[in-house]
Amino acid sequence: MMQKPPRRLLVISPHLDDAVFSCGALLAAETDALVCTVFAGTPEMPMVTGWDTECGFGDAHQAMEARRAEDIAALEILGARARHLSFLDSQYAEDGAQTLQAIADALADVIHAGRHDAVLIPAGLFHSDHDLVHRAALAAGMADASQRCIAYEDGLYRRMDGLVQQRLAALQSDGMEATPWLETIDVAGLPGYLEAKQRAVQCYASQLRAFGPHGYDDVLAPERFWTLRTKHRDA
Image (cartoon, rainbow, N blue to C red; front, top):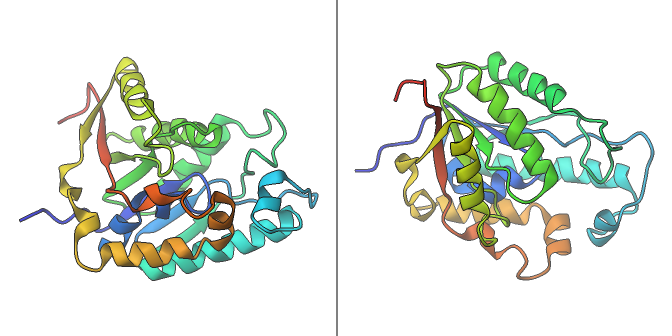
């Protein structure tokens, strides 16, 4: 019989959809997981961006209010809780306005505030925001040798040629070991979990509108995870 994954999960999400797109079935299988989204802040000025326009919004203020509501609704379906940090999505932020250290410090505070069996971080594929959160969450999650740190493969980007392999190679060159998290095999196929994820994904109506009818097919593919260890940590 497959082992049940840890009961108390903290999932670090770059944007207001990434955690559900990447590991929604796992969240459905768990009880009271916490999803912390980094780029959930609203810019001071109600700027207009191309992506928000494609999503059907008039400006950034309208977009972020709606997107936070979408996220809360999606996580409620999965039985998870939302924690929204105030950092700005790269489409709103000025260059250099958000530092790796500031994000790492904020994530360290979230990690230390709760008792988590595992912290799940994005592999940080393709998107600059994902890469930044990956590096910040890795620094925060690996700072405590007793903390279990697991990487999830970013939905939508994990199927792009070679990106997962490149990240695994980069981790190895940085002295990290990445081992498949076998406790989650076939979790997406277990009764009810994939169906719950499908309903949760539909909550992100604004994002799905911009992706188009088949632009998000990847989110319902099997979810994959990697246990991360530094070479000096206990196996």
